[in-house]
Image: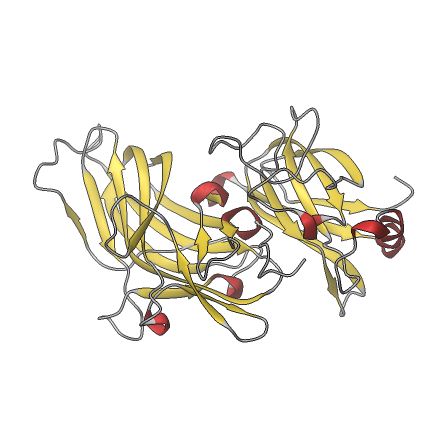
Length: 331
């Protein structure tokens, strides 16, 4: 499916640079006065049809449960007067762009983390958020929020900073996050596909899909082929409790229990001569892992009746090791 008609809604880590400052009306610090160090990075799971997904991060704010907010300005390492622009597609899988390194903050429980994004402006796309299509055309990238001041917000809830080094990543699953509305010159980035992961509490799932299974899937779904006869090969991660795994979609701004938790493209590695995938920064636990060749018809804004799972596996990810999974016809 051409990205310009529908973006397939799929790891950002970003570390914050700068000094923190608390609000004048802040109440208290977290329950303990002991300090922690906080690092934040950006990573993503990519989509097809785009060469660049440039997000301009202006600041990061974290809010303690007891009320205090601490903010960090995120500035370009090459020009401290500019907000930090990150091309998410440069940091896929378990690759990370470090925005914040070892910032000292109070240890304790935090209610939320918020990333402020400079929204795309057609009058100044080079310094604001934007996407670049494979044909070289450019469109503004917008994160919606209340108000109209050119700044968008991505807010995620609930995390803890221990009295030690804390390394987190913001993982952007662009298949779930990016939306390209019809008859609109802007592309929207929605928080639904963004996860905050503690690196000390996550592992990776990686593996291969056999050429035979890929061929069989395309043959069995020939009627779903795109106009150029291509297919969207991807791996979707579901909760172990998902009874009927489905496509990516929302109902009343909520993600259904049967929708995927994370996605990854299946790509050909010429060096290994294999079709491979990687899901990074996953919390250990029991899951279902699925292969599909119909990801190209998966529109994040609606239920796609023709989308189907071709092979489904039950998996368990432990804290000790990454997990390797292979999809083949014999399984």
